[in-house]
Amino acid sequence: AYSELASTRLYPLELVAGWTRFFRDQLPHTHGYIVAAASFNLRKFFCVDLLTGELRVGPVAMARRGRPSLPETTLAAVPRESAQQHETTPALRCQLVKWLWQLSDRLTNGMYSFEKLIPMQPASIGVSLFPRTGSRASEA
Image 1 (cartoon, helix red, strand yellow):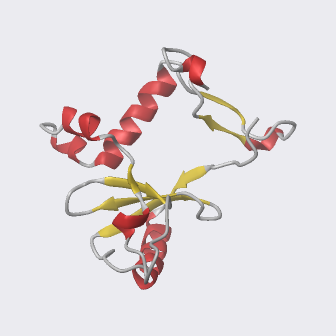
Image 2 (cartoon, one colour; image 1 turned 135 degrees about the vertical axis):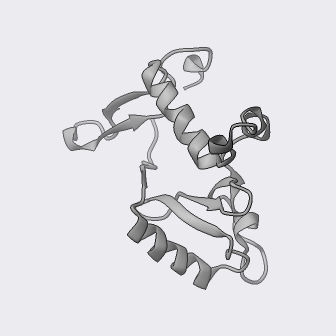
């Protein structure tokens, strides 16, 4: 069993602007990024590089000295091979769009499902990212 819930939601534009300002005040080298989604406690967040379209997820580590930069404390959310697969389609150059497209495809095909994220709490229904079908179902 898992002891931590990492529920993430996409932000409306007002929150994108507010959290982006916050991140820019706290971290160096964030001028080209916007915060697009996060968990309620910021244990997980997604940022989009507006220059490249790259989607990053974090935090995964803190820098050892000084103020950490966003690229140092996050990982690419879309694997390089997957990101390059659809680069000829302008809309899919933005990895956030690619990530959302992949999520909707996996929901439609039954790989992911809507279910209670916290047992015995019916109000906790959300998208479970544990594979229900396919070759990765046995890994969860």
